[in-house]
Image 1 (tube, chains in turn green, yellow):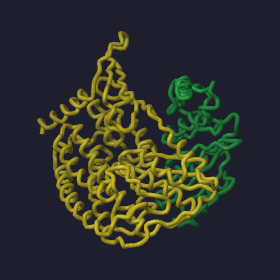
Image 2 (image 1 turned 60 degrees about the vertical axis):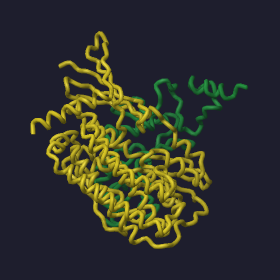
Image 3 (image 1 turned 180 degrees about the vertical axis):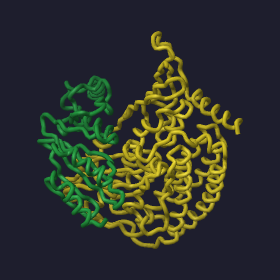
Image 4 (image 1 turned 30 degrees about the horizontal axis):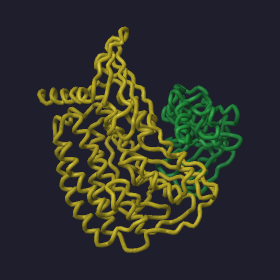
Length: 167
Length: 394
């Protein structure tokens, strides 16, 4: 499949959901998909285009948290990125792991680090953070700082900072 | 039947990635498995946001002691995708040479450990002996046995002098002879075929569902390899092939890795023949605003890096996905239904951390919570005894 064919296929299959299809260069295509259609679009990428879910990236922006699902289309060597988002402050999104087991770990990681809640996730336990990490503190959010909010940091971090700052 | 829960891990001084496995067994058969990651989270993604693009490759080389070329490689490609820089041809060849040397020593390390797990200590000693010249060669070429730190955005940092290239060919001759012998010995050995065949099967469909990569999937008949599908470095200029085995068991994964070592030797020879003097690095003046994606085929599978830049010297979001992160969950498909003696080997076949099995507590009777601790030696013994049984029956 060459690049124009791929773009027209993507337009045909995902055009009904997508806000925008942006080919940054011939090998990298970014598609914005509103959250309500994200599962349907992901299924098309995995089942119809035979893409392989490489991973997902969570990104904190001022008003929403973006989740980027990266698919490798191995037959033509193109990476298709589906960008969806969870509006603050609720930060909820439908879970892909219920459909595709390969998304299980990465969604749990995003849930831990950025606080996106995935609806219908089959196994929403913690994956990355320690068991004694406080609820509601998300270390990859841009407003997180272990130093500034000293009262809200976990016990072990507080002990560490005191040791360093005490004369 | 009574169920027994076996916690494995998470820490051992010599393992690279601490992980926590919990196996549920009925008798000798594994019926369920749970994995807990990130017992030693280093926050590399967050640290990258405080480093400049020139500093990041040095941190990324330390993600993994074995794949210390692949991670910076994927980073450089992500940045080159972002700023649209073309690396000069000599830089591309140098990258291929280092990546393939890394593949050879990583796969030989794995073959040795897998041999040790099933009680073939001769394989362990031989494979590691064959690996040593490769590490020494890397030290002579780049200055380090591991953590090569030779990649930067736009090309390579240091050149391999033209007069040192014959040394590479010499070592490759040695490696090729040894590995061909080892491959033949493994393929012809009836005990190995019985011991490794048919265990830890990951089917084609399961490999697709878990989105696994690398030799783990190529052993299950999934024909993917980033080096061929989206050629980077000099791979599209060379003549080589991807090895795929359809069976999906541990034996298939072993064969794939051994054949890949020979393929890597072939690639390096061609690189040495074709490489020409010239520039090794393209100058990168600034990083534009935008996003970049780079991926590379590490010995264990695909590493995937995503970089998001706002036009300053520091990335605003950096994402790293190491191959074990997607290969490990497939453990859920391959280990359930296996004997306990094979569980360790099935984990090892994925090439994650080998020594997670350092301490194992078997809860024989949950009501009185009397625990029996199985250490690594006992688990090894279980595996060795099975090999002995097969040897006697043949």
